[in-house]
Amino acid sequence: MRSEVDPILIEIKQKMPGHDRFIGSWACRGDVNIIADVGPANSADKLIGSLTAMGISRIDFILLTHIHIDHSGGLAQLLDQFPMAKAICHGKGIRHLVEPSKLWHGSRQALGKIAEAYGYVLPVSRERLIPHTEPRIRGLKIIETPGHAPHHLSFCFRGHLFAGEAGGNYFTVNGKEYLRPATPPRFFLKHCLNSVDRLLAMEDQPICYAHFGQAGSSVRLLNMFRDQLMLWENIVREEISGAQSDLVGRCAERVLREDPRLEAFQSMDADTRNRERFFIANSIKGFAGFLQDNG
Image (tube, rainbow, N blue to C red; front, side, top):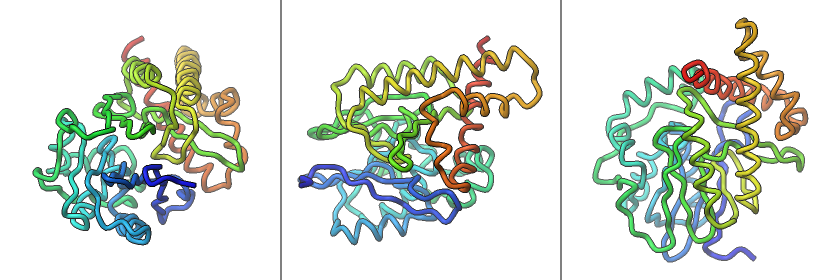
């Protein structure tokens, strides 16, 4: 039986093909009600509807792992719905939530039509935001985990690790595990590896991903992810040393062929494969940019 403090994964459905079971929010109920990440602006009403259907009428804190619009885009709507709530995010990300025009511009450049589907980010009042260095909440530990984003945070709360995308994207396809890096440009491999090691130094616990699911052992999954990062670095480094034409395409074919953690790709439906090809390519671009800048 689920205890009241066990986290519940809420799928935030999107209208885009291939985006089923891809974006989620985690809800923890107890003496303190907390949710981790809120999804895009255009689907905020769906998250609010799910929380209402669960009987959640009070949220104390919203934990933002980072301010990318598929994680923070719906924040203004959630805070309007739950006026008692405050959001905890990296202190350096606060200005982008208060005045989101730069965040929106960067999102459109990086994601194109996907950003348009996620929706424009509405501004949030500064007084509703708490810098990550300030909270003193019983049972909550905040860990700086840059890599996927410069201002990425992970949260430990009551025996569960909410890793955002610090450990990649993880879900199952027909019972098969699928693990993929989330390393978009600008990517800094050393920072990402340091963040993984920081999480590995903690006790083993269930790990909760924003994209999209939970695994029972953070140590097992983070070690898998660390090995995956090193494999992708090696593949991209080898391909950079060769012909420059279609670098991303060549790397994508190799990781799909050589990385056993991507084996479940072949079991996906066509729309989901198209989504994953987009994000695989984006992650490869992050590795390529890092290696071209750092040799």
